[in-house]
Image (cartoon, rainbow over all chains, first blue to last red; front, top):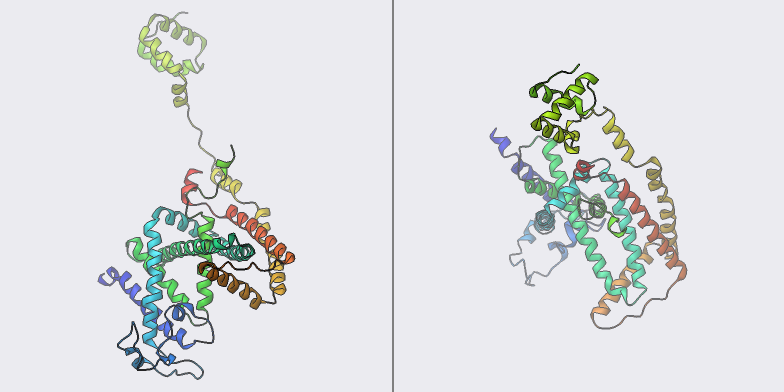
Length: 245
Length: 169
């Protein structure tokens, strides 16, 4: 009974540990395959030959240098748990915070979007729409480049796409959290707890060696597609009735 | 034969009287009573009013297949769903053509990096020179954008409605 009471906390802890372990493997597979969540935004690890005399701005202790282990497999980079923890505390925490922020700011819209995602065939439609939106964005950005006047619009287009994808990833996180609740018969908890667990699942998927970048791309595309298909979770959806008078 | 009816009896007969379901003799007796009783006449007038008549109507039970039929009627047709798949072909052809025309992914990434270089230049105050327009590439891009937009509108149409919309349906 007591264990069941803490099941959400245990699950979240397990997901966090799994994320760090997967990030260690993902970082070890560096240079063979892109691994954005484990490497790109965190910066290079200590094995990047930083001179020991150089004072680092955010890592004065240089404790990371002592936590680098040789890879058991030939051809892979060193195992770097310190860098993995950094990845978790930067990219992972950022992903969780942004996902939760979308849900906190737009709860009703998030609910509408998640309801439509949970209905069949919601995930397939979201992913297909996301793929089309990537094509549309590519086409639009390239076309905008051919004009001087609209070139300045490109950052705006990209910012809108980014915000839409983040809102969608937040909704997907909540949907995953609700699935976890149903599948594992977890006790009732605050929806943001479920969304937190869902966002950690997204992070874990994103740091799977080799497959992580594909998983992250698919989730981001599905999030973008979900946001656009539901018109940012609007209860009315896309309607042109107001234009027809 | 004229019959004298009490008010209580007339009140009971009021509904079938208004509906014209009484036998002629009883209906005539009610009519006679109404002519002489102001209170029953008032009740008769109220019973004749439209909202009251609507309320008195018994709603027939819906068919068991009603919900399934409505959902089937509002579901996207197979034709629309098939079109969503069919459009993948021209999109793939156009994308392949654009990639081939730009010499593969390198060309595409050079366009992307060109956009960011131009933006950096713009932020620095220098007006970048617009790249030379290739009509064939432009046409392919516009076609791809238009088809992808149309394809997206189809996906939006066949997307499942939210519970909110379903409740109002």
